Length: 239
Image 1 (cartoon, rainbow, N blue to C red):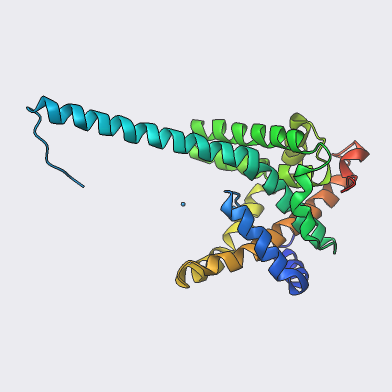
Image 2 (cartoon, helix red, strand yellow; image 1 turned 180 degrees about the vertical axis):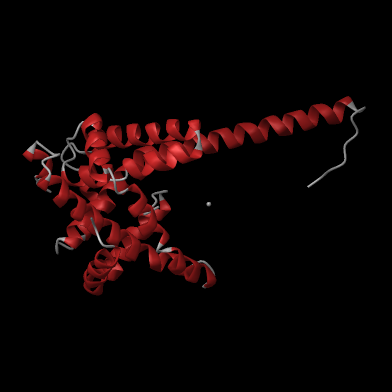
């Protein structure tokens, strides 16, 4: 059982010497959509010419929105996902006293890119499908699979089924505790919003660093309980 205050205290200690690096990494994660964890008009319907123009405008808007949405999804998958793993790599190694911004390139080197994108795609797909059933199952699965990018940060060659299984095992019995841990940052984020919203960016490194500490804590417990039976999963791959 992890203690929230201990995780936060350890994160604060780490950030004392690496805060500005962590801020940069958190900003990049936010930029590409990664979470640490929200008129009326008049018309003449009798005028066919105006109706046709309205339809053309509507079709143009729909097409534009569709293209923009597909582009955003592509950016999230092919840039956001690997950057998320790289960012988690930075925070995990930072917690292990290995502060190095070069970890931001981690997912793009040594044949890691495609395996990481594949696993993260399936993670996002499964959470999305569970969310279609109802919001609550989606949230639960989101927490069940939240350790996937951290596991990939330690072993980018994990198969997606194994990564999802390991994450599910690591968070088993802790989902509510992790949810409460996330809630404990709400006060900080509200203060950040009061500072014209900019203050939120300065809170994010604290949250990210705490979640990295959580991963290390749960990884240790998982190893003790022999849930991970493949020692290679625990190996820190050569960077």
